[in-house]
Length: 86
Length: 393
Image (cartoon, rainbow over all chains, first blue to last red; front, side, top):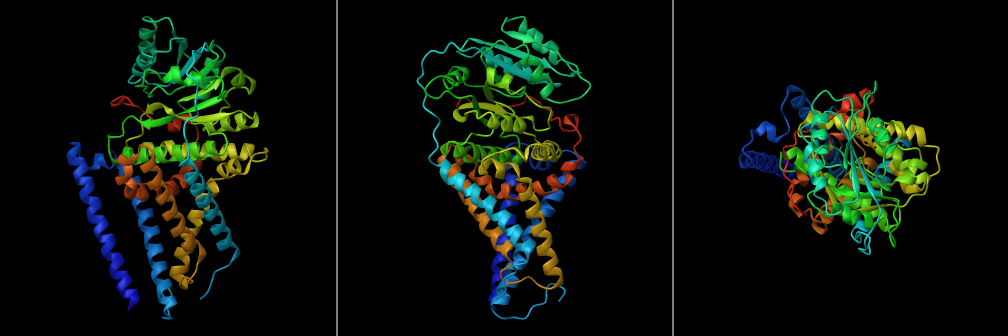
């Protein structure tokens, strides 16, 4: 139960952060009169690939971390878990 | 409750905790940092300003104009157009025609590298103090040189002085805003924090003053991808007194695209690793040793993520898998100290970019993995547009 509540709270927080982040970038690009991609430092195909890699790394790290924390909560509660594929 | 105490987990945790602790230690120390007090008396020391320029026609003229506007007049400017294929030399010569203090010493070499023009200029310099600048720098304060020479007089008697580096194109886009945040925090924490403990401030590759006699004694710059870090090691070996002067501000342009950021930072990592391999056996204090081996932090961070992923995908993570806890605590403590330092320094405007910086900071991992592919300075050249706005500080 605690794990589910924890997951819900975390998901909501991440969702809100993503929405706020997207709106902030849109606001910044409009304020400076620049296209959204330029605001994010993307001007060529190479830039977009590198941006995607950085975003992927951040997402992976956060996913791993959150999953680890959730598993830790389950472990603490004595719920038997066997990993994502377990 | 199970604690994973396998050697690799303990090693990763130890490396990550050490770096987090060092960061927090200097961050807390930096809260008491103030620029050293000078006497503000007339100095007779002359300055030679070096401007190495590789295809910098868009920016070099602005910097020369800023220098010619300085209140301190006892200086010469040496512009070294190096392997240029644009009008850098012509722009510099145009300025030289209006003021005899500007000298232009064009240089062509087979290999690329910033050290060639710097050492070339060192052999011609007439000043007592050398100021190394990049062609994209701007100096909006007209008393920059006047205040800088005071640091080479009693009571400070510095051997080298590092200026504060601010971002000229901070408002260009989100990428330059987060880089500005990074520089603001790093300079205050690492340069200021080290000075609080009488440790020399590490020198950057621009906005830095040296006593010419010392620079010549240590043989100038070695040809490294991070010639600034290598020079710092040589200055440390010579027991030089290097101070950080936050009241001296020079502006430079930051890369505005991801590919330019990657290009620049791959060079930093590769260059730093090369210097580490070259100078690891030299005697140094613990803080310098940690700074030297910091690429291992990247390795530890990367391994930690890989291991956590493997644990999760195969047989579930242990309750207290140490690197998870260490990563959470170190990230929180680092960003908390960055927050405090930005509030205490003049970086409040950058606080809102801390979440964006968290995402940005992940670039160090792919940059680290790609760094071995950087071959030379030629691969890492950052183009400058000159479309920047600076304001008097």
